[in-house]
Amino acid sequence: MIENKKILVTGGAGFIGSGLCEELLKTGNKVRVLDNFSTGYKHNIAEFCNNPNFELIEGDIRDFETCKKASENIDYVFHQAALGSVPRSINDPVTSTDVNIGGIVKMLKSSVENKVKRFIYASSSSVYGDSENMPKTEHIIGHPLSPYAVTKYVCEVFAQNFSRVYGIETVGLRYFNVFGRRQDPKGDYAAVIPKFVSILIEKKSPVINGDGTYSRDFTYIDNVIQANILAAIAPREKLLKDNSVCPVFNVAHGERTDLNELFHILVSNLSELCDPKISEIKAEYVENRKGDIPHSWANIEKTKELLGYKPAFDVRSGLKEACKWYVKNLK
Image (cartoon, rainbow, N blue to C red; front, side, top):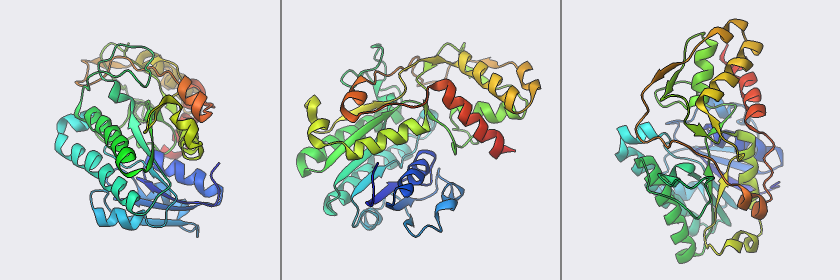
């Protein structure tokens, strides 16, 4: 755990960021959030606002002066702020590039100026692109299949460059399809699990792109929070064992679940937790989406060895917890 430190979480009102804030506040840290609420929500952080160790700065990571103010007197930065979603980036590559690349550069530079100890940032499994290597290992990537994937790869390049040029410690975490409490089920770019859950609770048929055989390494939020904290406290010499000045790590459980199986697990959970009639719902199948990677499966051996990562939730136990949360909070 991290104790009694000063921490900045960018995108802290988002799904992953708010989970990090919750955990960090438990151990006596002073937590500052920078968020412009473009994809995050004030209700995600409402329970923290009366905590004297919590501070909110409403602002944009594209504004350098805001980044400098937010990173002042900070020990660790957890950079979660970004515009996610492959379809969003295909529809609007300009804004995704501006936020994801421009934002991390401004945050890195302000962190250097404010002498931040370590900068932990969210990357993505999308950087593996069209690589057919399975499971995905950190040193083998392919060509990116979407503007979003390009932005996440460029974020890694910039972090590596800042480590070399300015000496700031940076650690990248390649998230694999994170899900769990507080993940937004609404909107055009909602992730598949909360979207399916909310539709099933309404007793409607969710839409599966393709024939349902595309697979993902779905990763419960608590595993991701654990990996972030481990990335912050790991000794520098251990991080650099792979001879990288800017190490990156896969964050997943290390198992594959296709969309058909995912649908059946959710139907089973929700028919038990919510309404038995949900068991009668069938999925609707449409064509594949542009930019989607067919299969995603992580090799997490490096993360286990160098960070001490021990994911506590597999996909089934994580989905059970997520379904309980949504049943309680969507009604």
